[in-house]
Image (tube, rainbow, N blue to C red):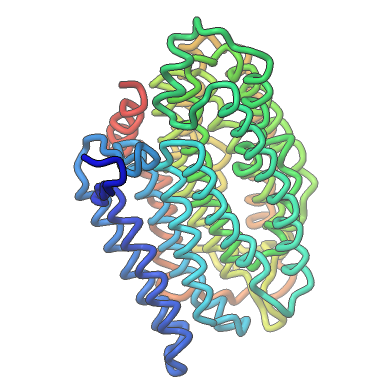
Length: 485
């Protein structure tokens, strides 16, 4: 072969992403050039595209495939995360329809931006080197910045988008600087080559590499809103349109955590002695702050922001173990957390009166008497988020704490249990308000059929997960094993 010969990459591993990119561009052109194309028709096209993409992901098989010189990887781990991401984005699009119509936000750009954000998330979990990692991260982030400020006539939404953009740009710069330090001291950006450089942990780790690791970890911690890089989360969750908040609490969390897990366990597993200390610290800080700071919150979206910070701290307990069992626990946790969030934000979307969307915790007063079915569903979900057995949330925490104990991280597990007990207060407070406080006014909060279906499905999943957990447990085990071969 001559030096100038062009070798075409194998595009089969990236076929779902290519389809997603082409489909998103086609829907964008449809919205731009066909004035009669409504947001509804573009949304239907987006949902169809998400389903076809999910089918392609599942049909890719169980083996590992690489393309673009190892920059893009498809394996059981990435497929598990992609299914959760596609599910999260699809459910959010369905949930958003009524809200977008009521708030006069039903523009075709919304589903297109969701698709582009989803494409970025899929690229993140399939990143095989530091360059593709950054490209996927930025594609996701830029789309989410716009979505956070999508309600243009709302000062709160504009402020949320601006805060998210400024702090996100800072975090991206920190992450990019860390990646450049790692490249500068190792001479490679490829994850497999980095794993070879660090070997079994006996390779010499210089100060420059430690700095690179710290900056890279800081950038990734920002994306999962872990303490002390959580400062954007409460304001953005509160100010962004509620469907966007629902999206931020689900699919991007899966993508960022999956990316975090891949980076720590594949290229940097040889540096576990260094990064384990960092992960343990941000895990403890996130669990404690998420448990304590949410207690005084009276805005339910802001409360869910601190709840998400705490839950990411619990998920990091599994990663801190640095074992295959720990990664499996993280994946189980993410699946259960996303399923619970669907139902909670479905209930939040139903909270409205003639004046518009309601967001106060006290607006739920007396819901057990005025809307008993919605109150029951929300109570089940709150018990599950608190980790009350035998609901799904209990098993999510059980798996990560068990992994930490098996890895000898007893102090981390004990602190996690204590934080979970403290955090149960603000979930139980919501239940107390719904069932024991007098209703302030008549709460006629009708749900659309699709929203009712999502809330019911989420509640039943939380209630009956313990009967047959094997599909998720087995899938998570297969996905985790892909990172430790």
